[in-house]
Length: 187
Image 1 (cartoon, one colour):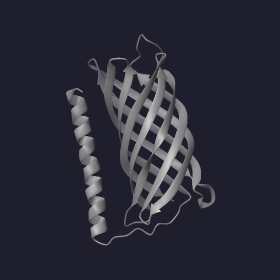
Image 2: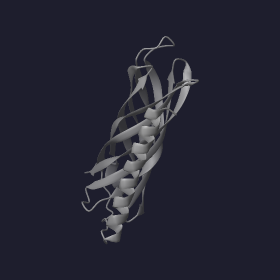
Image 3: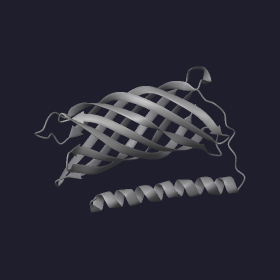
Image 4: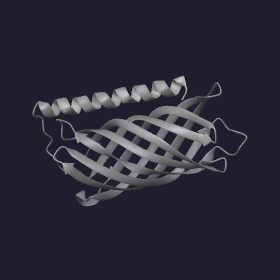
């Protein structure tokens, strides 16, 4: 792992640690969420993705992702849509990976102040710079889940998410781990 990768992993660990400490400190102060179900939510956050482009060619990318989910009639299942943009450097050239996907999501209120969820998405991806091995566009899918930890405000939560993103660029399948942290707005 190069210096950029070590720095990205260190920064991600710091962000995850700060979120965990904040959640523990809030619990120690007696702050409790109300644990209510909502019909819709919007999320925005930081994303780290390790992109396995080709055998022996890997890059660490950082960026953001945003998603929306809709649960009809406060049900435990719903529709999910997500976009992600991550950026890195490859052989001294800036590179990017954009993803846009949609699919289904299930949720369960595990604790009074936390909700766990799983999702499966499919869509497309776009990678730059163009490489001689094939086109810039490819099929993409994502499977994973996360936990939403409620804040004092019942319309706001903090999310920690882990996913496996699959793509097929350059006639090669890539299976890329993705970690995200951010804020959820509930409607």
